[in-house]
Length: 256
Image (cartoon, rainbow, N blue to C red):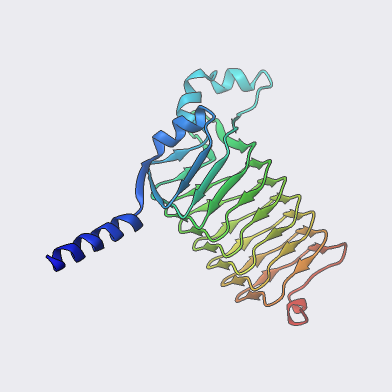
């Protein structure tokens, strides 16, 4: 009897700590309806297409006719919902950027409210190219295990990438950070690209580990530039880098 009770207790504890499974299609419906999304300790299955491409595509004109009249090939979805994912695993793609080769259109998503992907694991693609984050944004403690991009992304408010791990090449080319951003204690296992990025209120690379190349070419930083204990294992490109109006080179890392 005692052993049976112990077994039941252990099963209860295990069930309590196991992650629930949520289908991306259900989340997309709630986001479309403007509902607040607050998910923790869950596994998200299916493609989370925040551009809603499949819904938008049938309503669009043929590209030749449209573009010849001065139209644009970019279709942007405005996400109004507050989004919060904490300690979640995304088993499939998370897409706020889709270049559709068949139609020629590029589908993107902008975010009007706070966005949180804290302590999450992206097992497949995480694409946020061209996205505009208008409120506080948090990717701290997350792990990107596949292709990822924040190229041309704009962050209007507070943003954190603390303790984040990028297992594949990470791209922040042309990204714009209007408030201070931290990459402290993060690990970039492959090439990290910040070419043409703009940090308008400082950036922290405190204790950040770049295990391969770091591209800071044409990068501009205004405000604090914290590189204490930053490590770059391979090459660092700082051509035309501007730190508060002054140049920057790899030798400066030795004097940090």
